[in-house]
Length: 235
DNA sequence: GAGATGTAGGGAAAAGCCCGGG
DNA sequence: TCCCGGGCTTTTCCCTACATCT
Ligand SMILES: [Zn+2]
Ligand SMILES: [Zn+2]
Ligand SMILES: [Zn+2]
Ligand SMILES: [Zn+2]
Image (cartoon, rainbow, N blue to C red; front, side, top):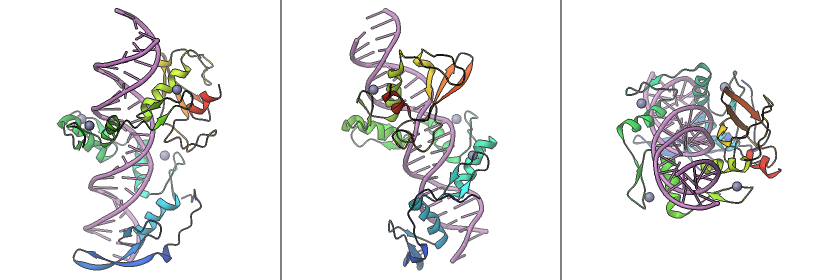
């Protein structure tokens, strides 16, 4: 397994405070994280917890070289490569690689909406949908277009908007050299690196690296080493 | 009215993080 | 006490129906 140290915070686990914690009616030895003060039941769990502070990712996927801090996350990740989808919906037979993705999917059949808005009577299947909905009450628009400075309630809506800036300026697909003119043929894929090479923004928050262009004949990939927001700022 | 763009919500995919039992 | 593997949460962003603007 490749060892990778992505950030420079060093945390000495052995110096972490031992504390007594009441568990199952008995007081047992526990460990308190020196960074966030969280109490963890045993030392090896604390070691794993510490990786959330250090950014250490000791587990690497041998298929795609992606690093993970958590072994079980890696084993779930491996199902992407194997195509394994062990959890099947009994209603629509759709398969899922992770159990809880099926659990949440089942709500689309049952109509269960566990996330209730505190401001109105609406309820939502997914928590993230509720979070977005709450912004319609607060007026909060945390996502700003770096080209025209318009603001949006969701990263998704910002991305949709961003595409309007390349509407009448078709550019070439590096793979096929064909020019594209229809923005509706543009979609942003979820493939992304850690940072945009221009603004060092975390692309997982701001934008994506790879713009996927769909043609009538299939999919080709247009790649540039920056997020679409930075790409457009330079034009 | 048509096409472009914005808004809000539904949902899938994948990663993050934690805990407890063998 | 350890650590495997399961439990549950969070993040990201695609998609779309409908509204509104030009
Ligand atoms: Zn992989
Ligand atoms: Zn189903
Ligand atoms: Zn509400
Ligand atoms: Zn803009």
